[in-house]
Amino acid sequence: DSGVTQTPKHLITATGQRVTLRCSPRSGDLSVYWYQQSLDQGLQFLIQYYNGEERAKGNILERFSAQQFPDLHSELNLSSLELGDSALYFCASSPRPNEQFFGPGTRLTVL
Amino acid sequence: AQSVAQPEDQVNVAEGNPLTVKCTYSVSGNPYLFWYVQYPNRGLQFLLKYITGDNLVKGSYGFEAEFNKSQTSFHLKKPSALVSDSALYFCAVSYNFNKFYFGSGTKLNVKP
Image (cartoon, each protein chain N blue to C red):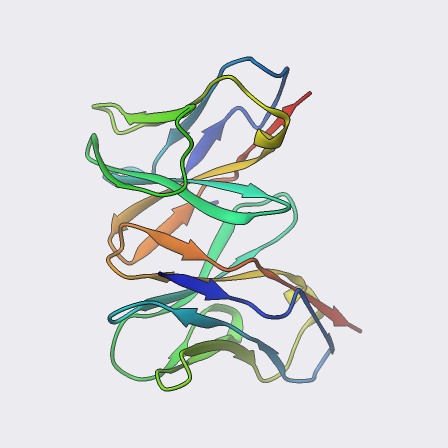
């Protein structure tokens, strides 16, 4: 158990809908990373937050957004969902720059 | 451009034999390199990292990796494979710890 929690574990929704994925980092970790893991594109870095501020952006679509709240939990919002958005979404928290602890992931299925 | 490549989709090895999972990178400047393992329906677990210093890095579960700057490689190795090592292995590279780039993953099959 990494200490990072993600909810929900599974999410099934329809195209065009909007969903919110939640991540609670390990106690004391200020940094949160979001990743998308799909069969055809592997594991892709989406975005990083540090203590509430966006720190780095990767291959994150404009339909996706994220934020980190004062209690350090983070949410990833996915809107206008497409079939291709079906994937595993992981968050990772980090106590220091060269170390990440991954959550168990949220499996999103878009029908 | 920063990228990391894992040239093998799958590696098959017999239990007790040595294993190697390959990783090469293309990053400007000095890279920080990582190996993670993923078991079915689980998140990634950290195995080891190279930040600086000794090119041979020892990690969890008897794994080690060698940083080779001239060949831009960071291959994962283990002297004697176990069936329980069967999993998906990811190499990752970062330049500034803000963005991490992961390889496509290599499925390791260890047969009894």
